[in-house]
Image (cartoon, rainbow, N blue to C red; front, side, top):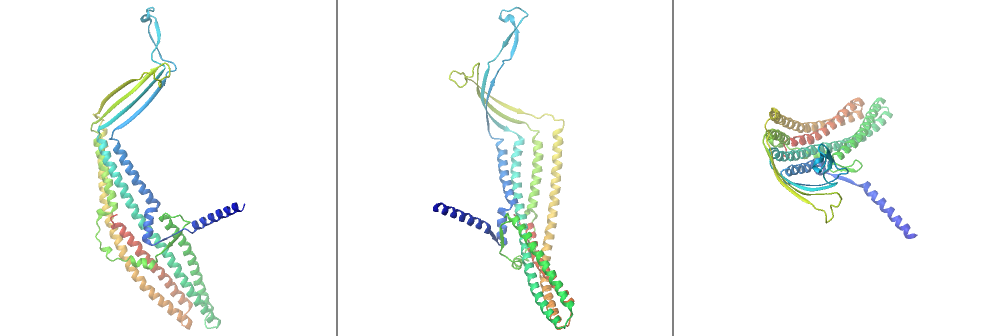
Length: 448
């Protein structure tokens, strides 16, 4: 009995320990680590990889159409009631003008045969092989495009979480400083040196900060869950980010990036459009190939057996063999101009794809110029807001001193504080913009 109790206790302990470990499971990522994890575990990335595998299978499926095909069949027929025919009775010594009923065949019939076929020439098959190759290229380029989008999404989502962290920290610092100022101001008011509305104004500002802090905390939860979704991590798991916004922004300052020449042919969007043009060319070739003859060969052999008793699998059953070989030539002659109409449609579709390619090329050049301009502006804004933050801190500090000395009112301090808080958020947003705008620019100029 004691042994049973011990086993039960150990089992329960093991289960609790396993559940605890499951609950404590967490992930810790730098930005680059998060990107690498997302490229492997993001749901869209997984399906994009599967699309490539499916395209490879499709390519082989198309290839096998031109390879030898072997098919076998086994058929059995039970003639429950044999079909009867009428023949002149005089064949059997009957009276002229009379007919006799005769049944032909046997009750049980069985046939087994195999056919080996080989496609010798078919224009559509040749085009199909080329199309399967292009289809694989489309899937591979789509995977590259998906990876680029995932990189950018991870950068943006990672930065949003860091922004929330920094905002919470700054608001906490502001709240602490304001609480200290409020206590000091309250003491001055008690001593009758300032009016009560100075204290009330600081209380309003403190309440606003607390409300903003709670709102940012909620936003952080949403931003973190969004990042988990992009990373392919369940929302229940813990996620720890090992970088901070300031260091990440500094690491993304690269003045040489905006001077990198843009080669539109290296853009994945341009390559995808090239695939589209290729596919339209192949569609045109397919329509033209439908006017060519096709040739195929086949060899057929088999055995059949007949009997009024079902004894096909006995030694007494006689099987009769047969075989034949043949060629099949199909020559299109006249389609009432239907093939010509389809060919003309394919030509129009090809011209449309070429026009779209020109449009994509010009659009990509414009996107590059805009992304470069946005990144350069984000670098300028980072310096501007950093200088403004230093000035706002000095102004707010001077107003605190003036309030304590009775040289200004709490309204002047509140105005300086609002200016400081807005500048703080602008500086945080400027750091985030540097990170995001660089990611957007790299997405356009990267080769894969």
